[in-house]
Length: 569
Image (cartoon, rainbow, N blue to C red; front, top):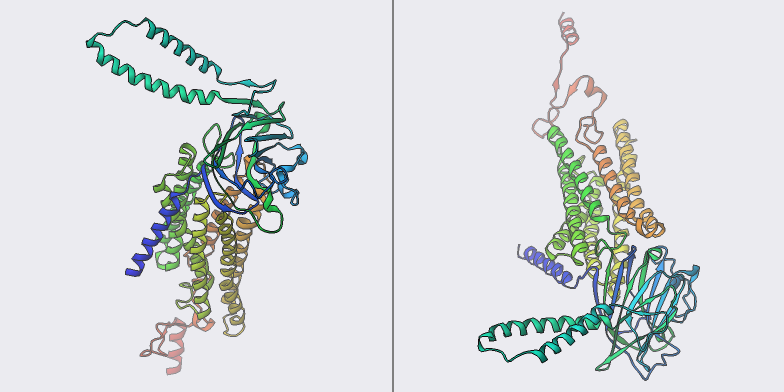
């Protein structure tokens, strides 16, 4: 008990620890002594009037070891047709993207190249653009550019002039007006702070990237670290899936890598909230699918109560799986709702979702493996090799769910993000393959038994059922792991939620078919008792205990009585 309690405590602490750094669509990434050439900060689908705010809080790079004119450092904002697989970076593996002069298919590409010698950021605009950039210009704005938010600035200047003129015209205050003067001073301090924030915004310049192809932004240096920020508004003709990356081109060369450190804050927003275009429908999708799974679970429980004398423990385990799946989808929907409205998940709801998701994953593979072994249907004891399957599947499934939680709560730019993503993919494939072994063993056993024990008809029925179950599992794996991923990388950015829809619908169909095949009914081949032909005609076995072994109850018919009478005569 103490070990179990300690395990639950450690799991709870792990969930809370992971969620502390989870910032969802408002990102803050800090990397120290990083040596990667490229850092994928985020992928996000923007609709028209979507906004991207990037603030480089601090950047520490060596100013002596690297010639940054030959090996630049900076950011790139590229538009992809699909989820990053057909972007320009995949097609130009040998060239640092910051040195490109054109993009494939004339797709929008914005390069922010940092120049620490002149304390500036050189911006190169490539491809067809319909975006607007707001940033602090290095010097005087070139022709064709216009200052923004000047009206508030002029109003503040005029208000300052009015205040000074009012001060000149003021008469000496009376003692009884001191209280009012204190209140006015508080209001003035508030106005001054608001004016300072407005003044900072006034420094930003709007650049129409459709007409401006080269521009220079200001780069600030504070205590040896560099910082700047920019704000992008996506136009109607430029909506799509965008990838934001950081590049340190020197480390692309073989040899010793130069470390660097930076902290960046990224905020992405669509007109409807903080979710990406492909994620906006997910909250409604999950809550609808939760209702469908809950309805299916209630129908299944009704069927179990109706045929209670044919119900085994595995049937109730299947009911628990359906209810856990519905509960997990409810919490998943709530989690996405708060991410859309707040920009980050509420920790309590996120923890509930991760707990139910972990339970659902464990119950799913345990149930599938138990059905494949025939446990509770035809036998109550598992063989040694079947026990080994469970000893492998259950820990791997826990590891897969932990990897999923870490991926969901870790920034995409961190190095451990991709490590855990590969672990999740590999472990999930191993689990999917492992649950097929019990089904194959059962099929082989039934094939051998059908020709030796004299009950070929019954074993052939079970064999047919197991073959159907094997095909169902294989189709489920293909649809949820392979076809769904292919659909995700080929669909337009705003339709990539269909990937999740396909996964949930495939899961629902698989649950329904599995429940139908192994339903508690008298005509189910799994639940029919093996009987010989002579037993059907004459005898009904009462027991097989040691005390009454060999004793049977004989059903005597009228013909039987006549035979007895004839024999006595």
